Image (tube, rainbow, N blue to C red):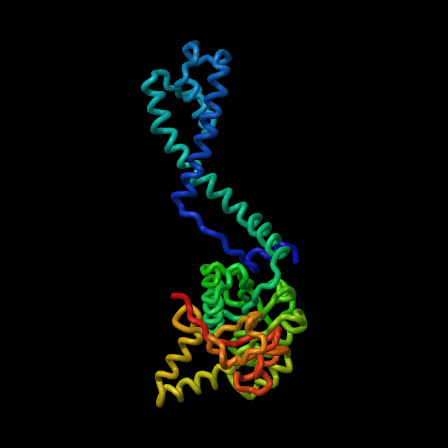
Length: 338
């Protein structure tokens, strides 16, 4: 699709300047243009005469430039006393400039918005690489995005895909790039740059939608890491066959926490703490350091939960990972930011 046709479908966030600052900038530019015109007229004042055939003073040049730049014109009603012209410059002109700012500035901004958005979309599509695509911005999608942001991911590295504009407005307010459309369609995921994404999060509200979106995403991005959420455990094999690397069963996970909360509520609090990167402790993954080669993962300073070797996760007490090897990654508990 051409970039101009994507305006309204793809939305690139931008930093909003305050209204006072935006108007102040326009007033400053107007004053610069005004005084430039005054200097030009003043340097060539011998070529100008007023209705009284007098030589122009600096005030006369200022008045002439003012009425000229404001497109007011002159001739039918002409203040000829210095006092009247001074009042015209100090009072009438600011009112006139404010009117032009509101009328012309706002009109030009509306007319150029689509062009600016099209240019931003073109630049974004040419540069976006190794980002994360989040399909669905409901409760699960929002929570996933918050976790990624808390873990250090930049908002510009996350693209949200959803079919509801109201939902996308909330994502855009968080500084995220948004794409409106059905994520089960390959053309919509292409607009989100799924073919260049490092990871794709499927957080759809329905399991059948999640399966189809995963299948479409895997076709576009064979190497991307796809993490999918489903409601029912019986659909786990379907979504894995569709290409998901990791599957989270939301109903069973919530059920387990509810069950634990009845007898050991403190355990639930610890789990919530571990799943919140910006508070307390968090579960993280890191590379093995050089001085850790050959050591046991159970005897490190960090609390190690597992070892990832050749893409497979081993429990810390598994005999396969008695000794840490080069290239392993450690799943450990780290302290969150203070």
